Image (cartoon, rainbow, N blue to C red; front, side, top):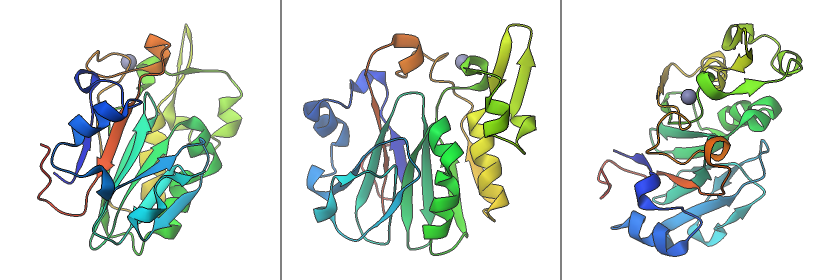
Length: 207
Ligand SMILES: [Zn+2]
């Protein structure tokens, strides 16, 4: 596997000690991280010296380095291309402000595989009615139930990638709120975070 996501058992990735033990074979010195702001900026990274990349929610590189973002309900999105790889942190704000479109602009090409990892599912993402205006054209990503309006963020992301010309998109059905193996900000109301990593090759030490 070229990509992986820490789980609750690995501890919160707000702790440097937990990050180091989760990374095992990978040196922290070979990992570039992003200083997230729930925006749409995707940075092309050329060197580990740039870590942490401030003000970016997406990282893409053509170099032999690892990239990581933290999540807890937001979507961890892994980009695996031929000669490039990337990772995105995307919540509703990022999706609304165009982080998927920005990442497609930054990729050398769209002949890549995208994997949308475990994140809050439609089952638990209740939104206000004004979200219908925020996500015009994505009506089929909403579910109107008796108890309220729910939004499928993973489906929004998947649709945007397909609209942008990416054919290979897979999506995890795991909901971080439902599945207690993951941290969930909405469920726990705590700032425990997971680390999503993408690497350059198929020989990652973590399975
Ligand atoms: Zn759920």
